[in-house]
Length: 139
Image (tube, rainbow, N blue to C red; front, side):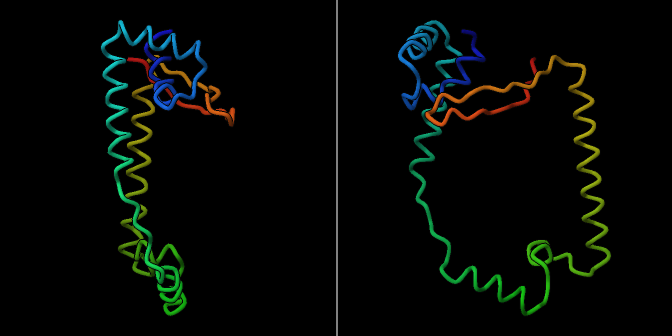
């Protein structure tokens, strides 16, 4: 296995969700690869930090407050969250920002088109057997 394959499997390796054969292959790879060991270490640290975060419930009256504001002002959810309403300046600003974002994304797509890119689809190692996909840009 190469480093890319190993790094894709490290979350499942950390969770003990792989077959013994795959787990052994990763263990052997980690013994000789400092980069993959570092990636696993960072993954374990991130997991520890995330598991220590306390979950805070939303206020019990949040839903009624939001819906009350919508009904009171007879506005859409878009207006409530973005405050654009019927202000032409704000609406124009939002359209301009969207066009700028589209231009930036388009330039980045053109920039990566000359590089070695691929789209991968793989089956997860968990019991669901779901498929996942990702876009990869090789260095």
